[in-house]
Image (cartoon, rainbow, N blue to C red; front, side):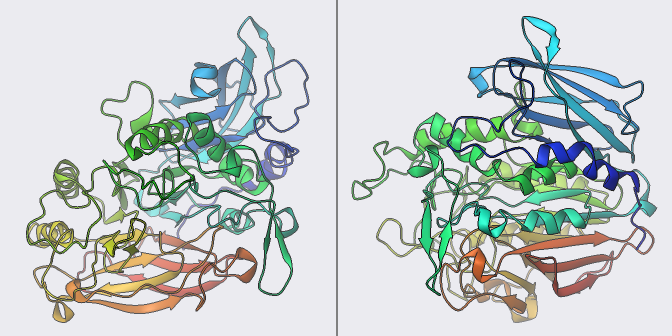
Amino acid sequence: MSHRPFPGRRSVLRGSLAASAALTLPAVSGAAPAFALSGRPGAGWGVQTGDVTSDSGLVWVRSDRPARMIVETSATESFRNPRRWHGPLLGADTDFTGTTRLRGLPSGEQIHYRVLLADPDDPRRTGEPVAGTFRTVSPKRRDGVRFLWSGDLAGQGWGINPDFGGYTIYRAMAELDPDFFLCSGDNIYADGPISATAALPDGSTWRNITTEEKSKVAETLAEFRGNFRYNLLDHNLRAFNAQVPSVIQWDDHEVRNNWYPGQTILDSDARYTEKSVDVLAGRARRAFSEYFPVSTLRPGARDGRVYRVLRQGPLLDVFVLDMRTYRNANSPDDRTVDPQGILGREQLEWLKRELSRSRAVWKVIASDMPLGLVVPDTTEGKANIEAVAQGDPGAPLGRELQIAELLRYIKHRRITGTVWLTADVHHTSAQHYQPSRAAFTDFEPFWEFVSGPLNAGAFPASALDGTFGPERVFVKAPTAANVSPAGGYQFFGEVDIDGHSGELTVRLREQDGTVLFTRVLQPGRVGQ
């Protein structure tokens, strides 16, 4: 492995980051973890970085009161001669959250940073700094790239269990010291209340940390914000955020199960007094933009969208999709003409354009939903389709038409090195798509890898749709539905690109980091 070492990083975790990881959990929602300096702003929710490039990155924090955000960076953890960045004023309009963009950073280097929160009326009064670290993207191919991906956190009523150690999967991921973490959606379950206890099949009891906002489905902006805060009560996640930059996308559970634009919630779902999904989605999107450092959602961003491309050096470009915001209504999905599809026309044309411009060896398409796995939707009492595949193995229909158009474009433009990563279905698997097995044949073979959940119910493997000729090469999934994290079946994936050979290695891992499946892909080839 040619991945570059950074020996100083571990000592940072043992030192300044330990304070962030060890903060006391609040007993009720709305109150930040206990903080050392009474009367001064506290950053008890930790820090995050996101959308890191070769010379920039976003730093996020939440204060417990109005404060001015200040970020200091240094080449060493001693913070001798730090560079200072003055960030925004954090107030109630953003739930006391804020991000600061750091520009002009050295490429391919370890950046140490610390966030200070200053009293707006007395800048000399600052709270205890909260430290973190990240690596900027290296322009040198030989340095390689390594990242992780997964999705689905705190779903199906399985929340932060202190008896279980909380979200322990983040500990295993931190040990791999990746360059970044791609979260493929369902960062929260806004439609999934968390109860204090849940019964397990063996007769024991799962115990959750609970908050007021997680006691019901999210409808108000305050309730959506509380859902994002809930996950930050976990010390494993806070420590991980302080160590590993994120690339975040969203899917349905940031709003409501299987939602689509224009949807009206049925009166039979008495949990909701707000029946317009568009209203809920607007509130969810605002909270999402407040609680994650996403470059295209920052104040002043040109078009305020989730989909974007992140250049990760000569070896990798990551194309982050949004299969939720622009989709058509869920239906049996058997139309013979479907110009809108699951991406919308504008996003599809953007993806084509950016793929054709990419000069990276590998082009990872981060999809929040799988392509060939059938994901049904019965939330409206009908047999509708939630993802792309609708179970008919014949010629493309419905949303498959848009994916066929994209796959045809990739082939005819001779775009090599595309790999699809996704989550959503709560099991892990590897599918190889091959024209010789397919009803639609005008594409080059490719791989799709599935991971997740991070901490949610696990479910049996989804059925395959033969339209694009998928073969399931590996799968690990339970035979029962909604298996708790205590029952296993929690997964994440790893992508490791070697700087010398250019080989891309995918490893599917389970909760403790054990490798379940490995596939090595060769650069510049098709049909692997």
